[in-house]
Length: 279
Ligand code: KIV
Image (cartoon, rainbow, N blue to C red; front, side):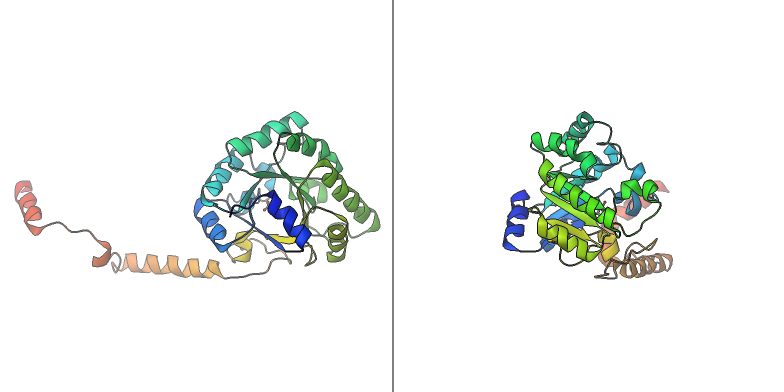
């Protein structure tokens, strides 16, 4: 059954945990969808894990549309949420609306995600008033990495914890259907989860959130540039891939691959005739 924002509302009401994983291409989206996740996030983390940038600020609308559309073709049941890239919604509510619309029309999004609290509430209102569901994102918001001065745990002092709570209430009032809480103390995430009517989706925010999200390359051990403390490795696919690549290289060099079973046949008669003609 197709998952929608209603799935998110109902899960919160029923106290059922929600799952979200990132994907950036058709084949991976298909595998994740078949595994039964509630949502697939086409995160702008694609800048790091797919494109090799050091942060997400270089990711463009074209990148998000290209990868979003591929994921949407592979996701039959999961809700497809596509990230709004840096500077696609901060400049004006008009830009926010136009770019959210493009992510739906061209990028296969059923919902969009954007980073920030009170300062993006007008954008959230504008986008949701056009019938596009918005997922908010608070705590460590990677598009503001240059302002944070690095990837660090957020909201540890009283003032920033209070600000997080008021931002969470503000994005809820503006119409967000869910909010990602990234890299904040677990007890603060639990408190925010308790006071909000919309579900919280945690990443580095503890087990009391209404759901969890992870970058799939992180949880499969496919990305080794850095591994945040909050990542659990659910598989070692990176090693499996490296082993298979090595085997392929070895067998190709030794001519063990391709063998008969991977080859196509033609009659000897035709080959002999061709050889004769080419003499
Ligand atoms: O871009 C992304 O993958 C994200 C998740 C880490 C929440 O925003």
